[in-house]
Image 1 (tube, rainbow, N blue to C red):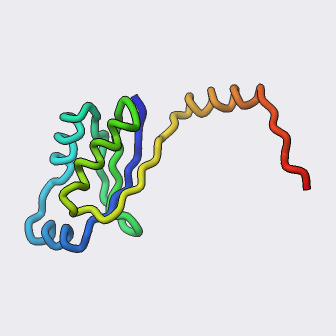
Image 2 (image 1 turned 90 degrees about the vertical axis):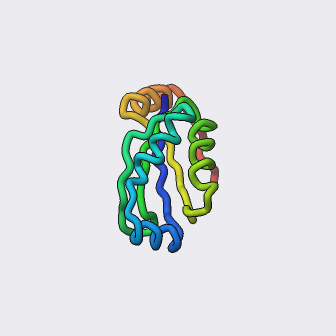
Length: 108
């Protein structure tokens, strides 16, 4: 299972609805993720370019994409950005593997 971080931004209409009727969106997303074979690890709201961050554990990118497509289909999300997260051990393995290769820099 891989871990993925998705940043999301709501539309102004979504914020207006949430201000009028506050709702725990984490439970709604958690239920959707589980139905589609993924697991929501956490949801955090943030300030800045994106309104929040969701950490998702899923067997593959297609599952993450399916969860996110289903989540944004109603139209209340205006933007998303998803990043695959690499564990320290995975990065160490990649570093070891990279140490065995060589690549010529461009001439110039």
